[in-house]
Amino acid sequence: MQKHEKYKRKTAVALKYDQPQNQAPVIVAKGQGKIADAILALAEQHDIPITADDLLAEQLWQLELHCEIPEELYEAVAEILAYVFQQRRQFDTKAT
Image (cartoon, rainbow, N blue to C red):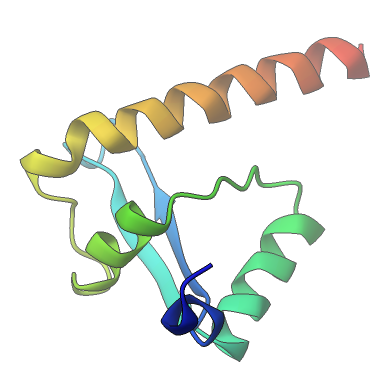
């Protein structure tokens, strides 16, 4: 681990994708440090899947709240959404 990585602040970004309403996922929450911890805790409480991608989180962090993600991030976010949908399907299968 490089020296600066030890002191790097945790970043969390929450996305919502409502296809009928939006053309792309929207940033609904973002934070660093304790706010990031709170976002992650809320996600866990509500069984919202969590993934880790530091580079993508930093890119999304630069965007404004309630804005759609830009086209250049579609592929990276699509990979995460595919993972989330897969996890939800597995959870739903186990619940029945």
